[in-house]
Structures are given as C-alpha cells and as structure tokens.
Image (cartoon, rainbow, N blue to C red; front, side, top):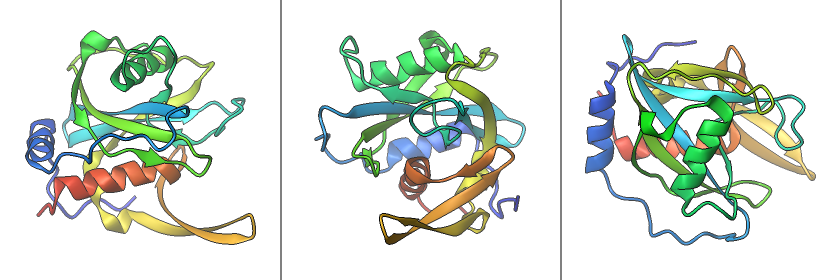
Amino acid sequence: MIKSPHAALSCAQVIARFNLSAAPSSFAPTHPKRRSAVVMLLSESEHGAQVLLCKRGAHLRHHPSQLCFPGGKQEREDKTLAHTALRELHEELNIDSKDVTIIGRLDEVSTLNDMSITPYLAQLRAGARWQIDQNEVEAAFFVPLAELLATQNWQSLRVERQQKNLHFRVFKTPYGLLWGATERIIERFTKRLGPIS
C-alpha cells in the first residue's frame, strides 16, 4: 500500500471539515421500497483518523465476501434510516448506539441492483469494544483515512457485465478489493472534505 503524501487528519479535523462543507442534496430516495443505510465509522489512532470496514461472509446470498461499511436494509420497525444504520452496526459488530456519535449524512448512492444506500458519518467512542457476528461478517478492520484519501492508492478495474464494459476504482486491502458502492461513498466523502495539503 502506498502511504498518503498528505499529513494525517485527526477525527476532530475530519469532522470539522465535514461540518463546514456543503450539506448533501435534499433527501428524495430513488427507490423508496429498496432503501438501506450504512455507517462510515471513524476512530482515532496514532496515525490519525481511521475508518472501519467489513468483509461480508462468503455464505451470504447478496454480495458475498465484498468489502463494505457496516449496514443493511431498512426494516419496517426502523423509524429512520439512521436507526437502520445503528441497528445493523449492532447486529454485525455488537457496537452499541451509545458508543457511536452520528456526525451527519452523505448523499445517497444507488447500486447496480437498484438499491439506494444512505451513508452516515459517525465516530466510535474511544475505548469502545466490538465483536463481529460471524453469521454476517467474516472480518472487520480499520484502514487509515489518509490512505483512502490518497488518489495514488486507487487503481482502475474493467469488468464486463451484460455485454458492457464497466470501469471501477479499486483499493487493495489485506482482505480483498474495495470497490463499487463503498468506493463511491468514499469518493463523495473525499470531495466533501475538499483539498488536503
């Protein structure tokens, strides 16, 4: 992995930049019957802010073994999409909502299978413990945000789907490639933070 040429930002610096940036567009889900929410969870480390990612179980029916943010589909009992994100975070990683502070919402992202994803930026309380549910998650790990922000750490991948050539940006991790909707969430987040010197 190529390290970032930029100085690492602390969680406080990331949150300050996020709060000063333009708010996401007004919320109007494209597919109101197929809605989901995820948490882009920040945590402080000696290398600055880091982001929690999950590797989905290989046995799962949808998106097996893919890297993603914790989250999932909105259920009928969820009052809001923020509740969906926090409920899924607890189910997948046993992280209690009292250990998480939601900072704000990012723009909705649509997947190739017509699911709309609402991402929430949040911060994990220092010292909070977590444990994966192996029925849903194969692994969970942190990636320094500075490495995700460095454009030279991303590569281009061409995939053929339904006789069309699709191009994706991918990020290599020890657990596989990060790409797809998760990559687009990170790209939009990076743009919202603005240039980092």
